Length: 431
Ligand code: MG
Image (cartoon, rainbow, N blue to C red):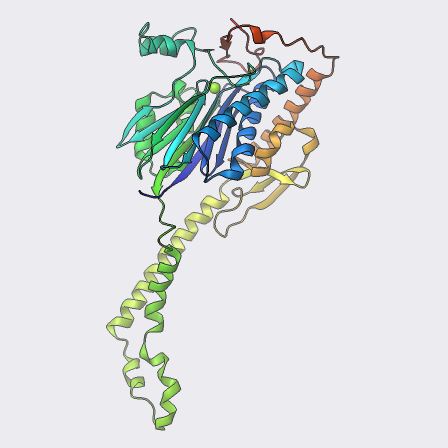
């Protein structure tokens, strides 16, 4: 059995049409999830954040020993958390979210759970295949052969979802168990990606870019370039051989580098030479560098050049971004990457006037982790957007709210409509 691990890259973007990003993602090795919220005002964002947060809280402490059943139960718990929140808060009624989540389980295998129309694809030997089944009306019509895939892509009812997390007290969760082998690549995404890019285009990008972070960023960039009509979120997972249990690469490098430096005989001779009363003969030989010493010097020089170039690249990568994090209670903009890259730690750019009391509590986990933005201005825009969302949710909650009795449990699963063009539309409604 080959020990494997996962290397992940992720990216998310609000797109070009929506004013807020209702997609949320979770990257907590080896647990990964994408949730795409729906609901008026900030409710969609609350639903997706709550789903991802519940999943992380239940599973993160036990990663490494998870079973498919654990993942299934965590998805059910996330459903209940979103449902309970909507029952408690009248203004959030009808909110919901998709959820696709994956984690390594014993085997090793990849366990995948899905509700809604976010997706998991598998790429093996360069062939891309959708693993999950979309829970929407048009996808079901395509699956039943009533319309073609091409007709489905332009069908006027393609936004009608048949299953979502949080719109009923219980939900049916699909589960898939996938083989994992080194070289396999998996893609989790919200529907903002396949809406803009064909499977062929997605596949070409995944084949072209070997680094999972580069691939994730390029997919999001391309989706925006092709319309960006929806929020788009992507996690690329690469299955790689896990060498850690049998080999320590750091030790190996040290051994190779240290051996030529310590081995020249002259190092040990001075300690014994004085007993002869004469300069040791070996000193004469040392004046002319031996081919061996030249090789060592050339090796060291090449090593230093590569190290310098690599260091410069890492420095550029580490410093070429900003992120929003927490500095005590204040939302703060840092330059760099959350957690730093190697020895390049993020630095404080500026502290905003917005505090944790002025944003939705659901935003706090991602703020603690750090939300990356390409520029300091984009980071400021993100902060003011969070503050605005909080104000909106407060103003919606201010009038004395009459919580309608929860009577929908007797109805069959209502199809849920999701707006595809505007975030200002009302909460999803039955149709
Ligand atoms: Mg979407």
